[in-house]
Each structure stands twice: as C-alpha cells, then as structure tokens.
Amino acid sequence: MVDVLSHCDDAFLERNGVEKGIMQLTDMARGVELYGLIGPATEMSGGSAANTIAGIARLGGRTAYVGKVKDDQLGAIFAHDLRAQGAVYEVPLAPKDHPHETGRCIILVTPDGERSMNTYLGVTEHLSPADIDEAMMADAEWIFLEGYRFDGPESIEAFAKAIAAARGAGGKVSLTLSDPFCIDRHRDAFSRMLREDVDLLFANRAEITAMYPDADSFDAALAAAADEVETVVCTESEHGAHILSGGQRIHCPAVPTKVVDATGAGDLFAGAFLWGLAEGYDLETCGAMANIAGSEVISHLGARIEADLKARFREHGLKV
Image (cartoon, rainbow, N blue to C red; front, side, top):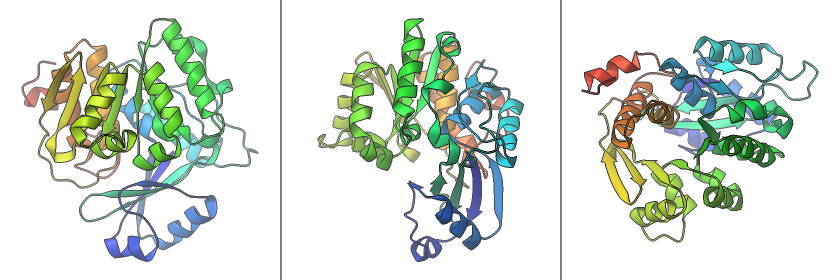
C-alpha cells in the first residue's frame, strides 16, 4: 500500500462524505475522485503491517514481509522503500498486465492530527495461499497478521497456511485488529482465529470494544480478550497502553507528544513491542518501548520512523 497524505479540515470531510478517523474501502473511481479533490499531497510507502515490519527492521530485527504489489511505478517504489528500511521483501511483483494496480490509501489529516483513510486495495486484495512461503513462516519466531488483510477473497486461507507453518515449527502468532469496521465485516473469522491461533493480540480501545460488543465496559472487553488470548496489548491514546498476560495487568503511561499525524501510531507501537519481545525484554519494558515508538511516528507526517529509536529509548531511561 502506498499512502497519499494530504491536510484538510473537518468541513472537507463532511462535504465529500468521508467518515472521520476510520478506514473506508473505495474502488478505483472513488480513489481518483478524491485524489482530484485534495490539496497538495505527499506520497510514501505505507501499509499497516509493512509499517510494523519496517519499524522492527529499523531497530535491527531480522524481518521479512509478505504482501502483494504490481510491477508498476508505485509497486517498485514500495518494494525499494521496504528494502531500504532493512526488511527482506520476498514476494514477487504481480505482472504488469494484472488487471489491478498497486494499492493506495488517500489519508486525510485534519488539524487535530486525526487521519481518515480511503483505501483502494488494488492487487493487494488478491493475496492468496500461493503467496505464502511455508519455509519463511517456519523460520519465524513470530508472525504478525494484519486485520485489514481479512478484506480479500483468499486472505483467510493465506493466513491459515502461514499460521500452520509457523506454529508447526514452534513459532508464535500475533494479530492486530486494525479497525472497528474491519471487525464488523469479519467478526466470525476474527473470533475463531483469536480462540484457536493467536498468542498476542494488538488493539486499541475502539477495536477491543467492537470485538466484544457484549462486554459492558472497556475493562470487561479487555478481560474477555484475555480469556481467549495469552497476551493482550491495548492502546488507549493519551492514556497509554494496557497489557494483560498470565493474570496480571500492566499499565504503560503514554509519552506526551504533539500530534502532527496519527497515521502509523498503532503500527509502530506493535513493531517496537514485537522487537522487544524477540530481544527478551519483559512486557512492561516492551510496552514502554512501544509507546515511545508510537509517539515518534505521530510527531511528523507519514507512518515510518525518522528518529533513532534506540537513542529515544535510552533518553527515557531504558537500557538498550
């Protein structure tokens, strides 16, 4: 996914039928329409899971990414950018004559830093089991699955193949819920995966309460998730993050930051948390690292890390 970021006001969102603060799927025609309506824009590689993998790679983690882009200009840019971050990009480009183009997301950023995403999935919608390298999955200590990826005709089958290969070799599975509307579209598939396959769940407050609508409070929703998943990590904006694991609950305070663009906050939070786990840090330290990474990415435009995160960790008293 390539991000097209542009600033606008709330009136622009209302005038053009864009719901604030969520991800909405569009077709190519709608994408072209919005592109013609927005002001000056910045184009950069994005994609939720790709942002997470790029963050882990920037921290020095050994990573690989599975996605699908076309052999077109945006696809080539995306693959180059991800490799430049230090990630291994293994999946071949879809052929030039594929009927769908590389996916792109028009992200409208309002003065409060909130982002409203309008996504044309393009060729990424057609990720299939054939795109999953079982040997790569078996080599992974962790695999990270993106909830947005449920929007695809063969995505769940691709997930199942990756999970089986990873778990069969002793690896663990993490999942991000991604978006409340994504949960509404695929609730049964999410529920089944959480019960059967997921070791670590990432979510924010809106997503966790959407996932467990019968819970009568945020705390009850967290408890319901913890009954199904070994470790639950839930962000709550300026209130920090909550980690539930092994019967304990840990609160990690947020890092105060002026919000320029909220795009990628959860993605980089997950990346730093997973890197910390792989490096053997305890859950509280992983949460602190994750909050620092999330605060860095929302302090500038775009969803990729710009600062030296390890230096930031040390500035906050973490031994890295």
